[in-house]
Length: 348
Image (cartoon, rainbow, N blue to C red; front, side, top):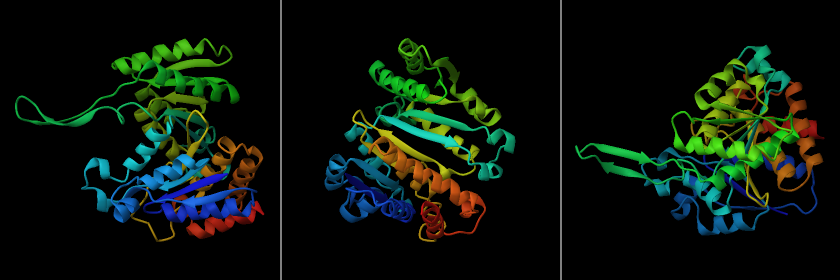
Protein backbone atom coordinates (compact mmCIF):
# COMPACT_ATOMS: atom_id res chain seq x y z
CA UNK A 1 0.00 0.00 0.00
CA UNK A 2 1.59 3.22 -1.20
CA UNK A 3 1.03 6.48 0.67
CA UNK A 4 1.98 9.70 -1.12
CA UNK A 5 3.31 12.30 1.32
CA UNK A 6 2.69 15.85 0.07
CA UNK A 7 3.84 18.08 2.93
CA UNK A 8 3.54 21.35 0.99
CA UNK A 9 4.22 24.77 2.46
CA UNK A 10 4.48 26.57 5.80
CA UNK A 11 3.75 24.25 8.71
CA UNK A 12 2.94 21.39 6.32
CA UNK A 13 6.28 19.56 6.70
CA UNK A 14 6.14 19.81 10.50
CA UNK A 15 2.65 18.37 10.91
CA UNK A 16 3.00 15.66 8.27
CA UNK A 17 6.19 14.50 9.99
CA UNK A 18 4.28 13.93 13.24
CA UNK A 19 1.49 12.03 11.49
CA UNK A 20 4.07 9.78 9.86
CA UNK A 21 5.69 9.14 13.25
CA UNK A 22 2.33 7.87 14.51
CA UNK A 23 1.82 5.67 11.44
CA UNK A 24 5.36 4.29 11.76
CA UNK A 25 4.77 3.44 15.42
CA UNK A 26 1.81 1.29 14.42
CA UNK A 27 4.09 -0.90 12.27
CA UNK A 28 1.40 -1.66 9.69
CA UNK A 29 2.67 -4.38 7.33
CA UNK A 30 3.00 -3.39 3.69
CA UNK A 31 2.68 0.37 4.20
CA UNK A 32 5.19 2.30 2.07
CA UNK A 33 5.73 6.01 1.50
CA UNK A 34 6.89 8.27 -1.29
CA UNK A 35 7.21 12.06 -1.00
CA UNK A 36 6.32 14.64 -3.61
CA UNK A 37 6.45 18.42 -4.01
CA UNK A 38 3.27 20.51 -4.10
CA UNK A 39 2.26 24.13 -3.72
CA UNK A 40 4.71 26.95 -3.30
CA UNK A 41 7.52 24.53 -2.54
CA UNK A 42 6.96 22.86 -5.91
CA UNK A 43 6.74 26.17 -7.76
CA UNK A 44 10.02 27.37 -6.25
CA UNK A 45 11.73 24.09 -7.11
CA UNK A 46 10.39 23.33 -10.59
CA UNK A 47 8.13 26.21 -11.63
CA UNK A 48 4.69 24.66 -11.10
CA UNK A 49 2.54 23.97 -7.99
CA UNK A 50 1.54 20.50 -9.25
CA UNK A 51 4.45 19.04 -11.29
CA UNK A 52 3.83 16.05 -13.59
CA UNK A 53 5.89 13.73 -11.37
CA UNK A 54 3.79 14.70 -8.34
CA UNK A 55 0.58 14.05 -10.25
CA UNK A 56 1.93 10.69 -11.42
CA UNK A 57 2.70 9.74 -7.81
CA UNK A 58 -0.80 10.79 -6.76
CA UNK A 59 -2.34 8.55 -9.39
CA UNK A 60 -0.22 5.57 -8.32
CA UNK A 61 -0.83 5.98 -4.61
CA UNK A 62 -3.54 4.23 -2.61
CA UNK A 63 -3.96 7.41 -0.57
CA UNK A 64 -2.43 10.86 -0.15
CA UNK A 65 -1.45 12.43 3.18
CA UNK A 66 -1.40 16.17 2.56
CA UNK A 67 -0.06 19.00 4.72
CA UNK A 68 -1.00 22.46 3.50
CA UNK A 69 -0.33 24.84 0.62
CA UNK A 70 0.02 28.60 0.59
CA UNK A 71 3.04 30.89 0.43
CA UNK A 72 2.92 34.71 0.60
CA UNK A 73 5.91 34.83 -1.75
CA UNK A 74 3.64 33.42 -4.47
CA UNK A 75 0.68 35.78 -4.01
CA UNK A 76 1.60 37.87 -7.05
CA UNK A 77 1.85 34.91 -9.43
CA UNK A 78 -0.71 34.28 -12.14
CA UNK A 79 -3.59 32.32 -10.64
CA UNK A 80 -2.76 29.02 -12.38
CA UNK A 81 0.70 29.08 -10.77
CA UNK A 82 -0.37 29.85 -7.21
CA UNK A 83 0.13 27.16 -4.54
CA UNK A 84 -3.59 26.61 -3.99
CA UNK A 85 -3.93 25.32 -7.55
CA UNK A 86 -2.20 22.13 -6.40
CA UNK A 87 -5.14 21.03 -4.29
CA UNK A 88 -7.68 22.06 -6.92
CA UNK A 89 -5.68 20.22 -9.57
CA UNK A 90 -5.52 17.03 -7.51
CA UNK A 91 -9.26 17.13 -6.90
CA UNK A 92 -9.94 17.54 -10.61
CA UNK A 93 -7.40 15.02 -11.95
CA UNK A 94 -8.25 12.29 -9.42
CA UNK A 95 -12.00 12.89 -9.42
CA UNK A 96 -11.98 13.68 -5.70
CA UNK A 97 -15.55 14.87 -5.28
CA UNK A 98 -16.62 13.97 -1.74
CA UNK A 99 -15.07 15.80 1.19
CA UNK A 100 -15.82 14.46 4.69
CA UNK A 101 -15.17 16.83 7.57
CA UNK A 102 -16.14 15.54 11.01
CA UNK A 103 -16.52 18.01 13.87
CA UNK A 104 -16.80 16.60 17.37
CA UNK A 105 -15.85 18.16 20.67
CA UNK A 106 -13.34 16.28 22.78
CA UNK A 107 -14.70 16.64 26.34
CA UNK A 108 -11.36 18.03 27.53
CA UNK A 109 -11.58 20.87 24.98
CA UNK A 110 -15.13 22.04 25.57
CA UNK A 111 -13.80 25.07 27.42
CA UNK A 112 -11.67 26.01 24.41
CA UNK A 113 -14.73 26.60 22.24
CA UNK A 114 -15.99 30.13 21.70
CA UNK A 115 -19.44 28.73 22.52
CA UNK A 116 -20.86 28.02 25.96
CA UNK A 117 -19.57 24.71 27.25
CA UNK A 118 -23.01 23.10 27.33
CA UNK A 119 -23.61 24.14 23.70
CA UNK A 120 -20.19 23.07 22.43
CA UNK A 121 -20.34 19.72 24.21
CA UNK A 122 -23.26 18.67 22.01
CA UNK A 123 -21.33 19.02 18.74
CA UNK A 124 -20.97 15.73 16.86
CA UNK A 125 -21.56 16.33 13.16
CA UNK A 126 -20.17 15.48 9.75
CA UNK A 127 -20.05 17.92 6.83
CA UNK A 128 -20.16 16.23 3.42
CA UNK A 129 -18.94 18.79 0.90
CA UNK A 130 -18.90 18.43 -2.88
CA UNK A 131 -15.41 19.43 -4.04
CA UNK A 132 -15.23 18.99 -7.80
CA UNK A 133 -17.71 21.60 -8.97
CA UNK A 134 -19.36 24.90 -7.99
CA UNK A 135 -17.90 28.37 -8.34
CA UNK A 136 -14.33 27.19 -7.64
CA UNK A 137 -14.30 25.19 -10.87
CA UNK A 138 -16.55 27.40 -12.98
CA UNK A 139 -15.53 29.79 -15.71
CA UNK A 140 -13.82 32.84 -14.24
CA UNK A 141 -11.97 35.91 -15.37
CA UNK A 142 -11.58 39.67 -15.45
CA UNK A 143 -13.31 41.96 -17.95
CA UNK A 144 -14.41 45.52 -18.52
CA UNK A 145 -18.01 46.70 -18.30
CA UNK A 146 -19.46 48.89 -21.09
CA UNK A 147 -18.70 51.82 -18.77
CA UNK A 148 -15.05 50.81 -18.62
CA UNK A 149 -15.11 49.48 -15.06
CA UNK A 150 -13.08 46.44 -14.08
CA UNK A 151 -15.29 43.46 -13.30
CA UNK A 152 -14.41 40.02 -11.95
CA UNK A 153 -16.67 37.06 -12.55
CA UNK A 154 -16.88 33.48 -11.31
CA UNK A 155 -19.64 31.22 -12.58
CA UNK A 156 -21.37 28.90 -10.11
CA UNK A 157 -22.88 25.78 -11.64
CA UNK A 158 -23.75 22.17 -10.87
CA UNK A 159 -25.24 19.52 -13.11
CA UNK A 160 -27.67 17.00 -11.72
CA UNK A 161 -25.23 14.08 -11.81
CA UNK A 162 -22.73 15.96 -9.63
CA UNK A 163 -25.45 16.70 -7.10
CA UNK A 164 -26.80 13.15 -7.22
CA UNK A 165 -23.36 11.65 -6.45
CA UNK A 166 -22.74 13.81 -3.40
CA UNK A 167 -26.33 13.41 -2.22
CA UNK A 168 -25.86 9.63 -2.13
CA UNK A 169 -22.67 10.16 -0.11
CA UNK A 170 -24.57 12.33 2.36
CA UNK A 171 -27.44 9.90 2.77
CA UNK A 172 -25.10 6.93 3.20
CA UNK A 173 -23.10 8.81 5.84
CA UNK A 174 -26.29 9.74 7.70
CA UNK A 175 -27.54 6.14 7.54
CA UNK A 176 -24.29 5.03 9.24
CA UNK A 177 -24.67 7.67 11.98
CA UNK A 178 -27.91 8.96 13.54
CA UNK A 179 -30.10 8.98 10.44
CA UNK A 180 -30.48 12.74 9.94
CA UNK A 181 -29.36 14.66 6.85
CA UNK A 182 -29.57 18.43 6.45
CA UNK A 183 -29.04 19.72 2.91
CA UNK A 184 -27.71 23.29 2.88
CA UNK A 185 -28.29 25.56 -0.11
CA UNK A 186 -29.53 29.02 -1.09
CA UNK A 187 -32.49 27.94 -3.20
CA UNK A 188 -34.43 31.12 -2.51
CA UNK A 189 -32.09 33.15 -4.74
CA UNK A 190 -29.81 30.77 -6.70
CA UNK A 191 -30.88 28.56 -9.61
CA UNK A 192 -27.89 26.32 -8.89
CA UNK A 193 -29.25 25.75 -5.40
CA UNK A 194 -32.76 25.10 -6.68
CA UNK A 195 -31.41 22.27 -8.83
CA UNK A 196 -29.41 21.07 -5.81
CA UNK A 197 -32.53 20.92 -3.64
CA UNK A 198 -34.64 19.24 -6.33
CA UNK A 199 -32.08 16.49 -6.92
CA UNK A 200 -31.47 15.88 -3.20
CA UNK A 201 -35.21 15.38 -2.76
CA UNK A 202 -35.24 12.92 -5.68
CA UNK A 203 -32.37 10.92 -4.16
CA UNK A 204 -34.08 10.87 -0.77
CA UNK A 205 -36.59 8.35 -2.15
CA UNK A 206 -33.80 5.74 -1.97
CA UNK A 207 -33.27 6.41 1.75
CA UNK A 208 -36.64 6.27 3.55
CA UNK A 209 -34.80 5.54 6.81
CA UNK A 210 -32.97 8.91 6.74
CA UNK A 211 -34.77 12.08 7.85
CA UNK A 212 -34.08 14.83 5.31
CA UNK A 213 -34.28 18.55 6.08
CA UNK A 214 -33.25 21.66 4.16
CA UNK A 215 -31.67 24.86 5.39
CA UNK A 216 -30.49 28.05 3.71
CA UNK A 217 -26.78 28.59 4.19
CA UNK A 218 -27.13 31.83 6.15
CA UNK A 219 -29.47 30.13 8.62
CA UNK A 220 -27.14 27.13 8.80
CA UNK A 221 -24.26 29.42 9.78
CA UNK A 222 -26.43 30.91 12.53
CA UNK A 223 -27.63 27.52 13.75
CA UNK A 224 -24.05 26.21 13.99
CA UNK A 225 -23.40 28.69 16.78
CA UNK A 226 -26.90 28.73 18.29
CA UNK A 227 -27.69 25.01 18.42
CA UNK A 228 -24.99 22.90 16.72
CA UNK A 229 -26.18 19.76 18.48
CA UNK A 230 -29.19 19.59 16.14
CA UNK A 231 -26.97 18.53 13.22
CA UNK A 232 -25.95 14.99 12.36
CA UNK A 233 -24.80 15.13 8.71
CA UNK A 234 -24.76 18.26 6.56
CA UNK A 235 -24.45 17.90 2.78
CA UNK A 236 -23.67 20.99 0.74
CA UNK A 237 -21.80 22.44 -2.20
CA UNK A 238 -18.18 23.43 -2.53
CA UNK A 239 -18.23 27.06 -1.45
CA UNK A 240 -20.83 26.74 1.30
CA UNK A 241 -19.06 23.65 2.63
CA UNK A 242 -15.72 25.45 2.67
CA UNK A 243 -17.14 28.22 4.83
CA UNK A 244 -19.30 26.12 7.16
CA UNK A 245 -16.58 23.57 7.90
CA UNK A 246 -14.17 26.33 8.96
CA UNK A 247 -16.88 27.79 11.16
CA UNK A 248 -17.48 24.37 12.70
CA UNK A 249 -13.77 24.13 13.53
CA UNK A 250 -13.96 27.14 15.82
CA UNK A 251 -17.11 25.79 17.42
CA UNK A 252 -15.13 22.74 18.58
CA UNK A 253 -12.26 24.86 19.92
CA UNK A 254 -9.55 25.12 17.28
CA UNK A 255 -9.07 24.75 13.55
CA UNK A 256 -6.00 22.72 14.50
CA UNK A 257 -8.23 19.82 15.57
CA UNK A 258 -10.25 19.10 12.42
CA UNK A 259 -9.29 16.39 9.95
CA UNK A 260 -10.74 15.77 6.50
CA UNK A 261 -10.93 13.17 3.76
CA UNK A 262 -11.68 13.79 0.09
CA UNK A 263 -12.64 10.64 -1.82
CA UNK A 264 -13.25 9.55 -5.40
CA UNK A 265 -15.41 6.71 -6.68
CA UNK A 266 -12.68 4.18 -5.88
CA UNK A 267 -12.22 5.43 -2.29
CA UNK A 268 -8.77 6.66 -3.16
CA UNK A 269 -8.50 9.67 -0.92
CA UNK A 270 -6.61 12.82 -0.09
CA UNK A 271 -6.33 13.36 3.66
CA UNK A 272 -5.49 16.74 5.14
CA UNK A 273 -6.12 19.03 8.10
CA UNK A 274 -8.60 21.74 7.18
CA UNK A 275 -6.32 24.58 8.30
CA UNK A 276 -3.90 26.41 6.04
CA UNK A 277 -0.14 26.67 5.85
CA UNK A 278 0.13 29.27 8.66
CA UNK A 279 3.34 30.88 7.36
CA UNK A 280 3.45 33.19 10.39
CA UNK A 281 4.36 30.27 12.68
CA UNK A 282 6.16 28.00 10.20
CA UNK A 283 9.40 26.58 11.57
CA UNK A 284 8.66 27.71 15.12
CA UNK A 285 7.35 24.39 16.43
CA UNK A 286 4.02 25.96 17.40
CA UNK A 287 1.74 24.12 14.97
CA UNK A 288 -0.84 21.68 16.31
CA UNK A 289 -0.33 18.34 14.48
CA UNK A 290 -3.47 16.64 15.82
CA UNK A 291 -5.67 17.42 12.80
CA UNK A 292 -3.07 15.80 10.55
CA UNK A 293 -2.73 12.82 12.88
CA UNK A 294 -6.50 12.41 12.84
CA UNK A 295 -6.45 12.75 9.04
CA UNK A 296 -4.04 9.81 8.95
CA UNK A 297 -6.60 7.90 11.00
CA UNK A 298 -9.29 8.73 8.46
CA UNK A 299 -6.94 7.49 5.74
CA UNK A 300 -6.69 4.11 7.45
CA UNK A 301 -10.47 3.97 7.85
CA UNK A 302 -11.68 5.04 4.41
CA UNK A 303 -8.97 4.21 1.85
CA UNK A 304 -7.03 1.37 3.46
CA UNK A 305 -9.89 -0.50 5.14
CA UNK A 306 -8.33 -0.54 8.61
CA UNK A 307 -11.02 0.69 11.02
CA UNK A 308 -9.41 -0.85 14.11
CA UNK A 309 -6.13 0.95 13.46
CA UNK A 310 -8.07 4.17 12.86
CA UNK A 311 -9.79 3.68 16.21
CA UNK A 312 -6.37 3.32 17.87
CA UNK A 313 -5.21 6.67 16.53
CA UNK A 314 -8.40 8.46 17.57
CA UNK A 315 -8.22 6.90 21.03
CA UNK A 316 -4.57 7.94 21.38
CA UNK A 317 -5.39 11.56 20.52
CA UNK A 318 -8.24 11.56 23.03
CA UNK A 319 -5.99 10.05 25.68
CA UNK A 320 -3.23 12.60 25.05
CA UNK A 321 -5.73 15.42 25.49
CA UNK A 322 -7.17 13.82 28.60
CA UNK A 323 -3.64 13.69 30.01
CA UNK A 324 -3.24 17.44 29.49
CA UNK A 325 -1.46 17.71 26.14
CA UNK A 326 -2.04 21.22 24.82
CA UNK A 327 -0.44 23.02 21.87
CA UNK A 328 -0.36 26.80 21.62
CA UNK A 329 -3.71 27.06 19.81
CA UNK A 330 -5.32 25.12 22.66
CA UNK A 331 -3.94 27.44 25.32
CA UNK A 332 -0.88 25.32 26.11
CA UNK A 333 2.85 25.54 25.52
CA UNK A 334 3.69 22.16 23.97
CA UNK A 335 5.59 22.17 20.71
CA UNK A 336 4.61 20.33 17.55
CA UNK A 337 7.04 17.52 18.37
CA UNK A 338 5.92 17.35 22.01
CA UNK A 339 2.31 16.96 20.89
CA UNK A 340 3.45 14.13 18.63
CA UNK A 341 5.30 12.60 21.58
CA UNK A 342 2.11 12.75 23.66
CA UNK A 343 0.12 10.86 21.03
CA UNK A 344 2.86 8.25 20.68
CA UNK A 345 2.97 7.76 24.46
CA UNK A 346 -0.79 7.22 24.50
CA UNK A 347 -0.62 4.91 21.48
CA UNK A 348 1.92 2.70 23.17
